[in-house]
Length: 158
Image (cartoon, rainbow, N blue to C red; front, side, top):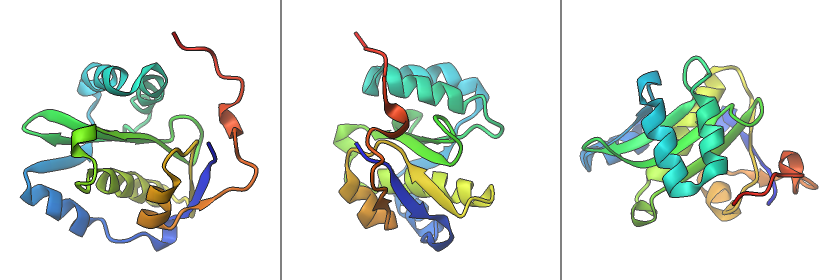
């Protein structure tokens, strides 16, 4: 799976994306330290051990570099940045029944705007599965020769 590059200085505004979800009762926000065990556990249950490990690292950053989408206190999706490498976005996951609702885009924009506020001009989306989503939503382009990138020689997962 290739890495992708996105220009952080040409991001769409975040607020319209969040407003639409808010009207549907969905909140997208940065996680809090006291939520670490719940969020990492949810990620492990929904998306596996590897993504849970990356999410766990996001809680050691200040501020925490993980956003979640919630509805009445239930997690619908998550996204992290600065977990695997500096300047990297990911992982990101949305429950299957909530895909296509705009949650993934809102989580992506939230993280990328946070990265831009840190001073990054570009962000790397690491080990992308659905390249079409990132190309369409933020104009990301594939980085030639980036597969497997930093995700080489991975440990086997049971």
